[in-house]
Amino acid sequence: MLDATGQLIHEGSLPNDRVALAELLTHYPAATVALEAGTHSPWISRFLTGLGAAVIVANPRKLHAISRHERKCDRRDAAMLARLARADVALLHPLQHGSAQAQHDLLGIKLRDALVRTRVGLINTVRFTLKSLGYPVSNPSSEAFHKHIVSEVPADCLPVVQPLLTVLTLITAQIKTLEGNLVTRSKKDYPVTQRLQQIAGVGPLTALCFVLKIGDPARFGRSRDVGPYLGLCPGRDQSGDTDKQLRISKCGDGLLRRLLVSAAHYILGPFGPACALRTYGQHLTGTSTREKKRAVVAVARKLAVLLLSLWKHGTDYEPRVPAAPALVLTPV
Image 1 (cartoon, helix red, strand yellow):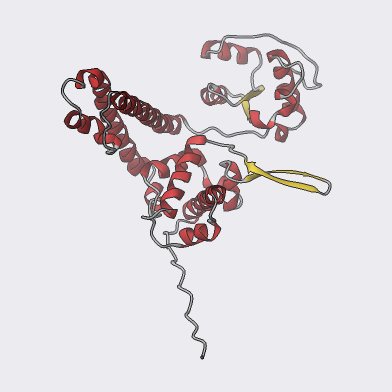
Image 2 (tube, helix red, strand yellow; image 1 turned 90 degrees about the vertical axis):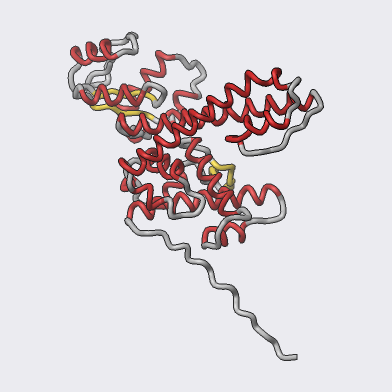
């Protein structure tokens, strides 16, 4: 705790619960509180704001004065946070958490993603187990994998993988239930997701995750600013005559970035419809794997800008298929 002149008036630790936080604010009412973004920062920031405190949620990726300190510890971290908040709030690169309902809905998407990853791991385990026994299996969809195994594997080998097949059945049912709930909620509480799904490759989960993470589209002065916010823009290291272009920063939410990249893969894939996004990516696609990855990331970045533009301006999506180049016949 610092006073108006920057003098230390209190230092200590407290339990990370609502009772202790409320008691702290009884001693320092209407205080300005600075904390780093993390697992607990959403509910803490909402709780303290409700008690009348001015809460600043700092971006830990930007606080190199803390993360790169040669003698880093919690005590010095807290002191640096307090002094940065007192000097200039912009130095903390503050973040804005969403509402409690938005956090619950976003957690539903993340829990569904965790179940999908778990299912993939179990499917690979079953596949490798049967392969070691000399019984390779086909490659059906993840939803139908446990059903196909029963008909493809001999009866004497089925008891070996039956426990995993039972778990796969339960996980698949839970994933389907979660997806149904999320789609229903997106239609009811976030109708703008229906407009975003007009773009081929953008499904209900991608649109809902985008809306929940952005929160307010007006927070971006320019639509193209959403690219750096999601970590889809290259980093930069400029000093003097040297100006290096680095890999993408991968800031922001990793799940949303992965969903946008998946949508970009569909747009550039064999089933992607003709549109300006597809043409833009095809112009960037080269022969090497690295060039193809760059093209996918570029399309994902442009897709994020397009989604934000549709949301901000309330317009419908027009594919704008580029016209084929005119055939010029030269006289012989």
